[in-house]
Image (cartoon, rainbow, N blue to C red; front, side, top):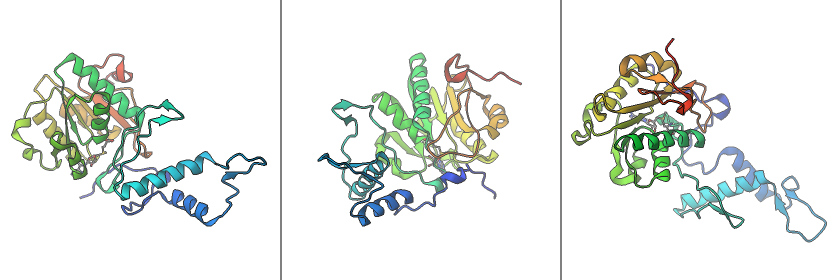
Length: 272
Ligand SMILES: C[S@@+](CC[C@H](N)C(=O)[O-])C[C@H]1O[C@@H](n2cnc3c(N)ncnc32)[C@H](O)[C@@H]1O
């Protein structure tokens, strides 16, 4: 079977290597630093007694390198939200993408926009939320509202770290979802792993199992190519807002909803 998958842009194609602590260019940078006693390119020389300064590029490579080393040693990172004595906005920690599982995380603006929309919907209805295969959204929802009642349905067992809010989910087997989740969610957000007809059909089965018939808000994030199928299967229409990912994707990506978001999410696209 030909699997229709998301296409990372050629520029962002780096072979997956779980053992690689840092991206290749950062490794090179660290090796340069180590091998050169006085790396002139990166250290800004000064006549006076001021301490030497690393360029911002090298500093960020150094930070990432040390963070990766700490992670591999199981050391908890120091919170990165206090810099120069000023509080910065807290970053959401995400596990690394595994492209073999079609994992492409949203960029921050996308994750925050969709999370805010979900929180707005929570104010309009009861607030049980199901996130199907969108772990970044789950993480941002918890960041924005720690008490939100949200369930993450995911195939990647690294997300078992979320404890009782995690449910193992294989899109091929929607019939294996636990019976206590049936029609339990007023808000369901899904981001299927593949762009095939078969995958969307199976995911739509899971969506109808989890959601309350005629009462739920449905949000689907997937490729533009699924527009007609999303309309046929679930009555969804695209919004103006264009989701983006941390790794640039070659596919045009859309957010589809079964409700009119008004002025939010760039509005609902009118029917052709
Ligand atoms: C296109 S990504 C969506 C992630 C989303 N953009 C985010 O940032 O949270 C697809 C998701 O499907 C999950 N996945 C991979 N294989 C799966 C399977 N067989 N069944 C269900 N989910 C699967 C991946 O782990 C990944 O989280």
